[in-house]
Amino acid sequence: RVELKFNQLKNELNEKIRITSNEKLKGIFVSRLNEVETAYAVLLEHFEPLRIKTKTQEIVIPESNSEQRTYYFFNGKEREGPVSLSELKAKGLNSDTLVWYEGLNDWKKACEIEELSGLFATVPPPIKNQIEPLNAAALSNENTVAAFPIIDSNTSADTQDSPVPVNSHGNSQSMFSSMFSFDGRIRRTEFGFTLILYAVLYFIIGFIANIKSSFAIIVLAYVPLVWMLWAQGAKRCHDLGKSGWWQIIPFYVFWLIFQDGDAGVNQYGNNPKD
Image (cartoon, rainbow, N blue to C red; front, side):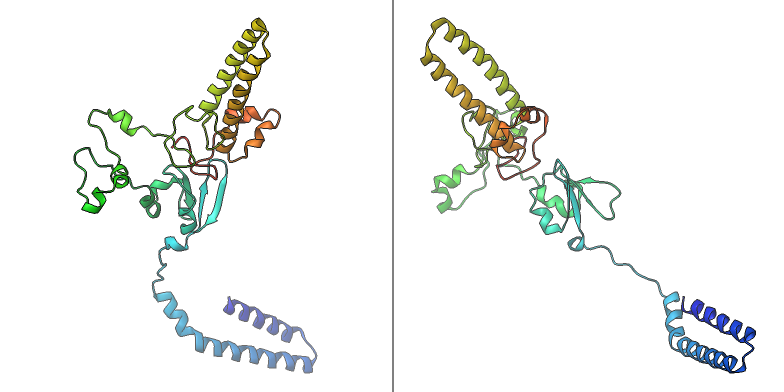
């Protein structure tokens, strides 16, 4: 580029010298041309060895450091990023979370990325009657012994591998185990069955109340029924990362039925699918 600029400037000065009839101006242009040629010669003298060395040397491009990369990931609803590797690890990813960084041709599961694979290493629990020996102090502590899960040899493989949902406090939770609680998260399936159960019980209670004409039956039956519906609705809102008050929005119930919940852990607890 420098050489091209110098040649362009010399051509312009030569052209001006050629077409100028004023001897004084022509002398100025000749003097300027000499200055340009002298400057160009000095530049060549200083930078020619460096240019030759650059052409002959092999340029080595260092490999990208994972700590310097910026990552993007899909949280189940939208793309998030860029984030550093340490920030990405703190996002509560699961093995199926899609991750991308510059250099990848397409999105990959987190478990397929080398620097993240360690987050999902599975360690099998000890087999019954083959628990590693503990020291005497640990054996005397009932809580320590109870902390080790034990697999019964009569338990089927399907039962052992099946995931058990956990609530926001970390305890095991199955479907309809806490229908009247407003804490935690539930899946679309449980919420859908709750709506069906509510409709059936609503008509049964109404039918009995019409026959008996008893206000007490209506109060004693409908209050727990409505409580159950609101509690399940609140937990379904939590699964979407929303407050339970969102369920009072008109027609929001349809969003609760069809929209998938947040992937991984959110502020209301663990993913009920995990």
